[in-house]
Amino acid sequence: MCRRIDRIKGDNIMKPDKQNETASNGHERSGEYNESLSSPARTDLVKHRNSSNRFTTFVVGVGIGALVGLLFAPASGKKTRSYISRTAKQGLDDVASTGKRWSRRAQETVDDVKDSIVGAVEAGQKAYRTTRDA
Image (cartoon, rainbow, N blue to C red):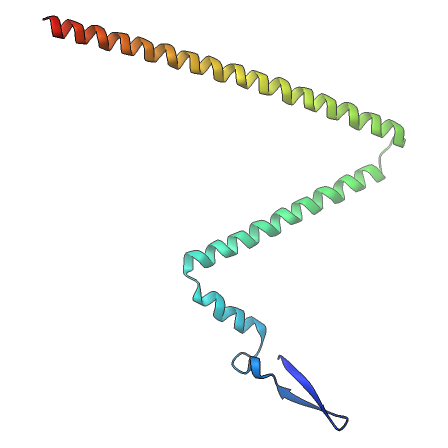
């Protein structure tokens, strides 16, 4: 229970805290607040808290895993740093080549769609002229 202690002539006397007379603890007070929220808003709040907790747990786990991996690395520090930099450069090169490949594919798709649209417009114009002249 949330209570405050008043000192009267050296004796400890427990008195109820006037701010919390209606609620016996902080959970009940927060429960009243959450009950005032609509059900979808409460659900969103719970989902947000859960996703934040999961993300934080994930980041902490990645950090601990990286630290443990570096501490128990089988190679010396110089070799490990060289390996990490080499691997990072290779990863960046792979990402760049993948990005270029996707960009090229996207441009080819756009060009194909343009050709299809031009063909459809020309066919529509031809059909219109044929119908108009008939």
